[in-house]
Length: 258
Image (cartoon, rainbow, N blue to C red; front, side, top):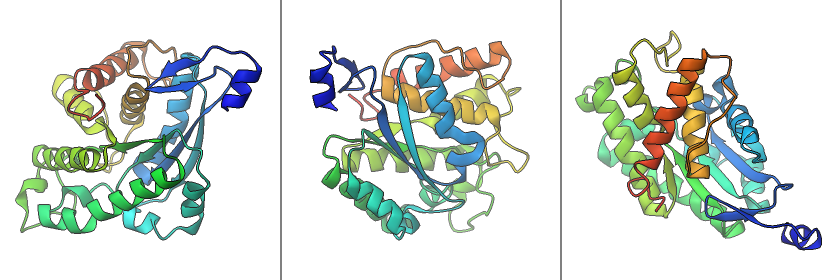
């Protein structure tokens, strides 16, 4: 990439702490499950990026219900990580695993997150790992846990997810994309905005659009205006863009970005 930049005598443009030429694509590896593949979240991020003249090349390893520990058994994913050359790696855990009791999360989530982060940096030392904080289910954990009532309501589940994802970012020197925090703001400010599908936990299009803007803002780290609206009403799309950007840019230190 740098040889190409030198040969063409192009000016390097800074983006998210990294330098890229306008002709090159930032390589993004997505590791997650249905919260990422519903409504083609990576594709949404690409479309938003393109309106800012930022090229993203996305490789997806997304499997319904998959956990970090399950992804670590995927030989194709492990080879893709080992091949290196990644600029960003977006890691999204199964929707309830980080909302479980503290000891269980420490045993079953954090070690796999640490392993994935270590493998990424072994092959791509300059890559930025982004932990994609998901949102609480509409009415709390859809499979209530009697011994952990904290997660059996929306607010408690969201707070536990927030803590778990921030700790994964802190423990690994990674960034956190606070989708769940932005989701909470929208629920509070605009209850008319339908973020959930009828199952009450997967994202509807506005939810995925909100997530896409949060993740792109995490990468770009500055305000922007995008013409891509995912066919949402213009006012709603504008509100979701603003909320996503505010949530990231007002919390850079909390999110381990600065």
